Image (tube, rainbow, N blue to C red):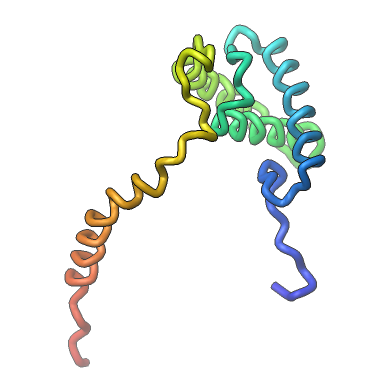
Amino acid sequence: MSEDQEIQLPPWNWRELSDQERREELEDLADWVADLQEAFGRWVRLPACWPRHRALREELAIFWYWRQRLFEAPDVPPEEAIRWHQSLRASAQVWSEAYGGCQHESLGEVDEQRDGRDARLAETRPHLERVASELVSSVSPEEPG
C-alpha cells in the first residue's frame, strides 16, 4: 500500500469519527433501530437502554451497515438478503436472552463501566506463557539434509 492510500476503517468502526459525526451516526442508528423494531418486532425486542450496551450497539450498527449495502450495492445477490434475515433472527434471539428485561438501573451493568480487561488478561498470562512455551518446545529443529 502506498503512502498516498489511506487505510479506511469499515463504516461501523466509529473510532476515527469526530464527536459530532459519532453523535449523528448514533442518532441515525437509533432511527434505524426503531424502524427495525417496527418491521421485525416479532423477533427484535430490545430494551430502551440498548444504546448503553456497547456490544449490542456495535452489533446493531453492523446489521445497519450490512442492510445499507444490501440496498445500495448493485452486485448483491438475493441470497445475501436471505442471509441477513437469518442472521438477524439468530442475533435477535441472543439479544433477547442477554438483554431481555434489562432496566439497566436494576442490573448495574453499564458496559462502558466494565473495565476488567487488564485484570482478566493478567490472570490469563501464566496460561498463555505455558502454552507458548509448549508450542515452542514442540517444534523440533529440522534435521540436516
